[in-house]
Image (cartoon, rainbow, N blue to C red; front, side, top):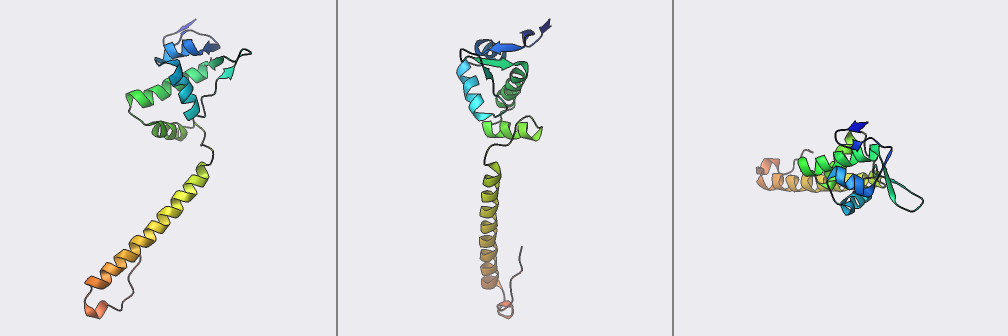
Length: 134
């Protein structure tokens, strides 16, 4: 049995085979393993990486997103998360909370500046008016 992209259909592939199939160097595959939680090859008793067909399919998708569509690593990770192919990163919910707090604080500062501008540019009769919120 053959697959057009993968050659002979096998249950597992070694890193050299996968590098040839995907078209990148083995060090690139090892780097992608650190960036994408969904790519976790098993290790043989000798400690060699053993990739499943599913791993190879994911690596091909990562390469397509990065090289063909021009995504960054973070963008490719997000895209894979959107389709359920990549789990959220550890601490991501904490990061989102920090970002929301920062945005909230920024919004308050912008509202305050707009209120000051409104008070400076408003006619004297409106000087005592309370500025509206965004």
